[in-house]
Length: 305
Image: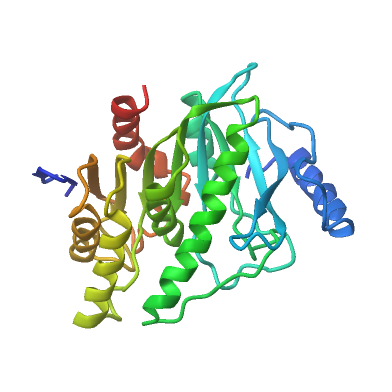
């Protein structure tokens, strides 16, 4: 069964080459020796996807210092400039804090490149080689949830501003894409997004889960989504799989309806059919673009021509 829900209408409905591996090995070794590289690209574009590693400067919220975040860009062939899709990852507690964190959804990257977008995969603070302290939200800690979201919003929007100044980017044609906790983050970032960000796509955003929520937990979660959705002007597309491991279709609709309840922006929810036991990683799967590609393509054609 396929579902598409918008605010006014409800319808049923590694990179694996040896050259890349060798490149990453030497780039990681170089970074390990010099953890405080100056900002900007630290490699030349490599391979068919023009992959390039960057260090992105982000001034902390209190202005006390500037940290650098790891990012990897991928560009179509040609001189550009290109519209830009900025990817942000989930909240993997097992991810390393002082070594390379490999978040590179190859199939999704290739899908966007084929449509003329450059892609910037940004690793948030405290993950891998990105500097800064990683904050963790404990279950039921609504204040901690807001604090962490604000940090993620700051990292995402600061990175967007940095890349908007790069000559390969069309500064007024930027898209935010997030997975899981990264989906929450881009939804929250939409309210404060820099001028030039046109829309947001969130894959499997959510807080309380199928097996572990009470009525109070759900109420607090809805309040959080309502707060971040209030006043946003950016169109958003939410995407879940029917067989999502953490968020049932009922929860997905609850989150979505709370977020969109106080905004007039165009909002859309898609719950997509997928075989198998767990659809939470739909965005990461090699076959993912065959499932989510048509609805994302339609969304982008309408909003980012």
